[in-house]
Image 1 (cartoon, one colour):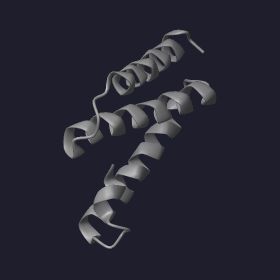
Image 2: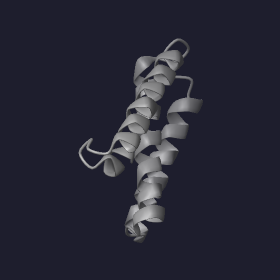
Image 3: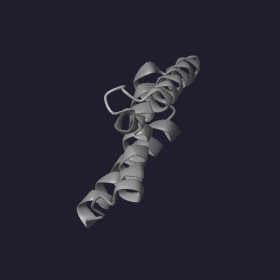
Length: 88
C-alpha cells in the first residue's frame, strides 16, 4: 500500500516509511520461519498482505465492494487460517 504513496519513490517521507516497513515485514517473516514451515509462513505472510491491501484499497481508495471481491477476500482468510491451524 505504501508504494502508492511514494509516487515512484519521488516522495522522501512515504518512501522512507515504506522501505522501513518492508524491512520490518521481512524481519518478522524471518522470525516466523523459526517455528513454522517456510511454505506455511510465506503463504500466511503473502495472504495477510493481499487481504490487508484489498481492504485498505476499499477503505482508502473507494475500490469495489462487489460480492465476488469480498468473497475472494474471505476465501484467502479461510485459506490462511486453515494453513495456520493445520500445524503444517
